[in-house]
Amino acid sequence: IEDLYAGIEHRPTPDVAIGRKVITRSESERVIRAAFEYARQHGRGKVTAISKDNIQKFTDGANFHAVFDEVAKDYPGIKAEFYIADIGIARLGARPQDFDVVVTQNMYGDIASDVIGEALGSI
Image (cartoon, rainbow, N blue to C red; front, side, top):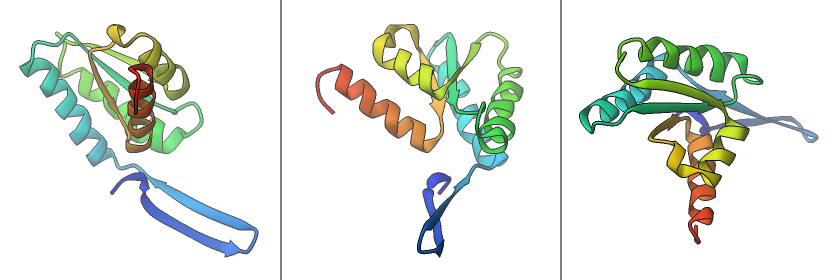
């Protein structure tokens, strides 16, 4: 129900369409903590977060990346790394072996899964 997949759109004029991106700190914490717990329970050594916080300062920055950094402190034995979506998804597609557990928002995850599928030979 979050990210652009919430489907919150409106058209204030025939020339303008507006879509709202919804990212809450609580849902970000839930999914990020789940990624770290998965890593811990399965003996994984690294969790990588991917978002576009250089542009989306509140949604991807304050409500996702900052929460990732906060939650990572609760898991000192697991390396935490962050990538801006563009380079992170490109590297994920080109060098998947460099990643372990990846956590991201809905839209970036959808894009990443298609990139990885194509890199492996088929979406």
